[in-house]
Amino acid sequence: MENKQNQSVQQNQSMSNSAVAENWSPASWRGFTAWQQPSYQDTAALESVTSQLANEPGLVATGEIDRLKKELAAVAKGKAFLLQGGDCAESFAAHSESAIEKSLRVLMQMAVVLTYGGRMPVVKIARIAGQYAKPRSSDFEKKGDVSLPSYRGDIINGVGFTDEDRIPDPARMMTAYQQSVTTLNTMRSLLQGGLANLQEIHQLNLDFAHKYSTTDRFLEMASQIEHSLQFMEACGIAIDSPYLSETRVYTSHEALLLPYEQAFIRQCPETGKWYNRSAHFIWIGDRTRQLDGAHIEMLRGLENPIGLKVGPSMQPDELVTVCQKLNPNNEAGKLTLIARFGAKKINDHLAILVEAVQQAGLNVIWSCDPMHGNTVTAEQGLKTRRYEDIFQEIESFFDIHQKLKSFPGGIHLELTGADVTECTGGAIGLNEADLEARYHTQCDPRLNVDQSIEIAFALSDYLVAGR
Ligand code: PEP
Ligand code: CO
Image 1: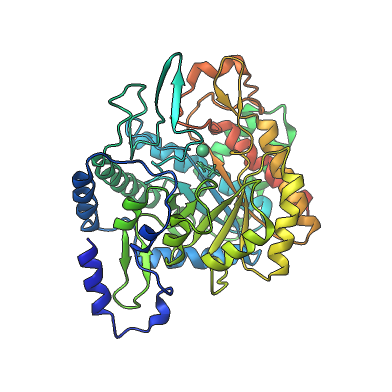
Image 2 (image 1 turned 120 degrees about the vertical axis):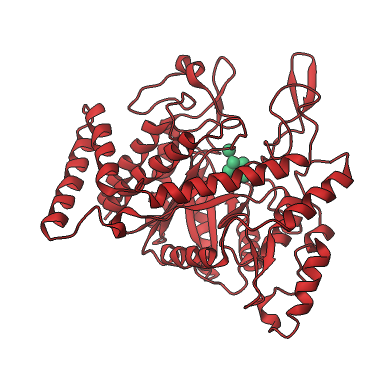
């Protein structure tokens, strides 16, 4: 694989060097400490799989990546809103057409409500078609007297609590790639085939509002959207026209497993720029964002729009340095800071970071991940999150930005289109005793379909009220 990359670098020697970050190559991360990586026993198998992957077609096109960055530039300028969401961890076993359809549909339903509430376009990015690698707080998982290496996502090892399952297996990378290919193909055909039909999506939102008709606001807002659609039709705008029915949903995942990510770094022959073609948008997790670490090194050389998780340990000067490293040309739309503090901590941490970014004049999108700082353990031992904490963190995020005259650009959620019971609360009124009924996540608890749509309605109301 490296030979192939060297060849392409040589072929492009005549290209202006400004397209490539200084002292960077797709493999330069190997000279830095890479956190949260599995240690593969069979290094020959690892080499063989990664070279095979490097010869496989990329999952997304460079033109699509550029287009997303342009759309995100509008978010950075306060003219659009970012909705990012999906599974905490995709699973090989749960892969199905209907699961993909449900995930897309819930994002679409939320986007319609947010577009109406925010009066601006919504850029939709799913955590899908590659979200298979998980950072872990502990290297080992203990059950009773047995301690085994932690599950690190289906691309690395198996979720079963057995010695065999937990051995990292490079062949899983090929399965992850193949499954991402079929996921993406399904997404593309569903989106072109009418899944995004505005009237149908709106009907589902109306059904939701009727189901929870004790909350007047849902019905009120759904009927306002209804009137807007009727108005559009009366004006002669066909709401089933392809223009309104086809929509874009971009793909994203955490760029955690670096040998896999490297296999998809490809150089554009025309411009000499380097793209990670495994997804449109990739992000660096809160546990792998060390300034001198391998993840920052790899991502700093890429053209893709990237995300950086920002948790309570981030210091203001550190944030400024990392932003300058990841976005040296201060391009709008290039960098999304995904704040994940927890409802209790956000008020102590976010404002000072927003101010540091403002003072340094950095172009970033601020997005709110109200999931990862709000994980608690229910009495029976299941990890859960409370709807109330999630929404409270979103409210604080909006309040802080409003006070500082900064744009709250988006939300980043772990959610599913299925009717699971993993987070408590919301209008659906799930409590801890309900969690066991349909607790299907391979990793963190996700909002279910109704809780997700409720977030969109509640947030829209907030967006309107905040004006
Ligand atoms: C995640 O988004 O799944 C994740 C692990 O987040 P964080 O890095 O913020 O903990
Ligand atoms: Co998670």
